[in-house]
Image 1 (cartoon, rainbow, N blue to C red):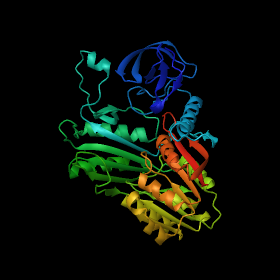
Image 2: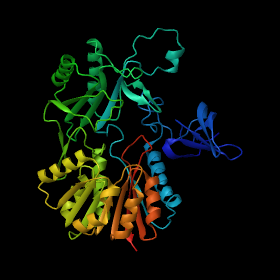
Image 3: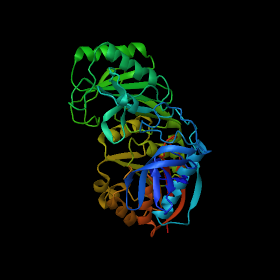
Image 4: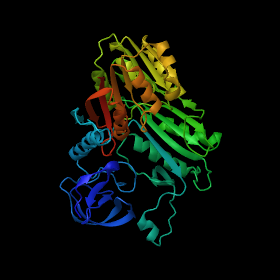
Length: 457
């Protein structure tokens, strides 16, 4: 079977002799393969490769030794030029197929300047029973080394792949992770047991800014004061790039950070990031785009699409820590940011004060509840709305409110072009979709950002 194109979530697509679609993971368009069906659906098969007959000319040799097991970077085996081509095609096909919109300007995708080492935040999990390869399972060798510090296996949250080297975050990220693991083993610190839901070491987060100042945060399942100090002092002594070290005690059933009390062990508890003349405080719970260079390009596109002249009232929905709101504030009369996460709004207000921005106001609340006629009456009718919702897109109540108040322009930033296209379809009777721009934020993966400009008819 020849694989003819790429589909959603990075799978390659082929057709049976009867014309039924076959979705194949970890292969690339142009490969000729033998496959084994692993799931049979009404409209398609899911299959895995059991043999290659011919390799695609677009195939690349993956950089990472963990490729094919780790759930990330599924397109390392596809040339970057083809990655861009398929991402661009996905965005514009979704607008046409899901949004049922044909007449709009399709701008060329913006490539990432860095194909590797572009992420400023990585999270790793400790496990006392690492993921074993098929070869290890089938061998008769007694495996002693079962500890892991790495990534969860897709669809198997209790299984952790031990990561030797990752190509997503620049050094010393790998050195820090590997050193922490070695230190923990040497000092007999207990790794988390997902089966028993117990242990000491739970997760590691490494954040960096564009100057490669680092933040390290560790989650411990229980309080062990002496061991915590021993490990955190080791990190501080070994890595001068680590400007702040934090930790939490987390005995919950999950490792989400949002409701935990973060303690600062070293430094001031945050990093500073700069975008142009603006400075932003990035805390352990802050949302900030993980590809810094591409984030700047994304914000510039949003600002350019808005076409501000300085007289407009702008609403920035799902504002996060207010980065877009503050980035465009010099070109607007007033910017109103709305976000559901209290810590993000607190950071947005602090950053605005730090940057001496007087024309930005930030409000916290669930978008579908706070974004009402009364709220708009109090804050002024928006001339332009910029919206950057989570992957599930905008709530229908938010869409209905936007349609009622009818701002002159909408700039829709999305990390999921399918839900973006769904929302565009809901608004197209009242709005003309003028242009769409795909932006590659995550090379070596199938993920892509999309920015759309809508104008009131």
